[in-house]
Length: 398
Image (cartoon, rainbow, N blue to C red):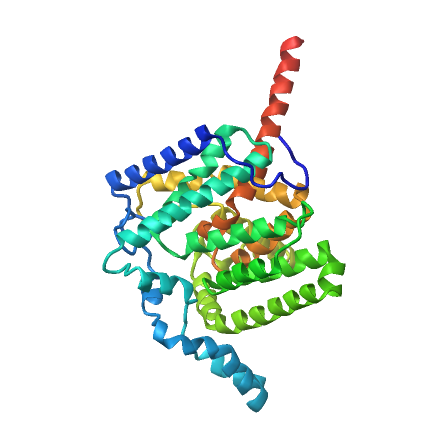
């Protein structure tokens, strides 16, 4: 298996692999349809069954006629310049949560609330295309056809395609951005226009799209400093990143305030975040107690992020198993990519994980980087089994 710093583009999949991926999707959809699976929100997850996640009301309540709300960052800037930063921050903290407009636009355009079949079909089609792109990427990294099929019809990918939320849409923008940035590793000139469009769409889809702003800026400056700092297109693109970053940070600030409170109320293996922060071992010296407790909070959030966590509700065992088992691949993959991955992969995964450790930790936030974690997790376990096989062979020859 290739572990080279770059990959061989997105080679075409064989007909057999593409067919098996499509068959895997069809089988998964049939399972959802026949077993009446209920998720952590207590709602049915089934193709074309309508909204199946708790935050849907927030998105459905966003009226496209009220797009003037997108000017909120400029209102803040005007107020901060006129009355002072403290006045601007006070005004901002009182603003209501407003989602990005991309997903509400799709819900409204396709009439999802009254007739969910059309948008549900589009989501499944996009999910299948994304799965095929993932499979093509790992093929370019030299992974066997079996792993290509598994990744192309990955259970969580199918699940979030059926759920029809912002998760699949955001994962699509993330993977296109990763593909465009990967061109720099293979010597292909980056299209700043397309990259700007994808980053704009990601920020207009959900707050975590801001991670792509940091990823793109940091990677391109480190990888191609002369192009980014010494050419007009590079400087203009960095200016775009600054502007969209400022806009998104201010626009979603009320989001952060609410989710920060939610994150404080989220328990990790039965303990609240604040419990970890207050110290779990009061009998130890204060500094040691704080260090160990914060390390355990970091570990607990990491395990939650990869799906190795208990369920918050009485959900079907199949869903619990489908969420937990991939964590055995993702966890070592996440650690290994930060050690052996190329510059883009380390920056991409590192900054993408940052919101997970700042706010609440959930496995759905990692959907966009599943192929990277899957590949490096596969590399890890392949190395483990190869060493065990070699050890067993030596013991048998004694």
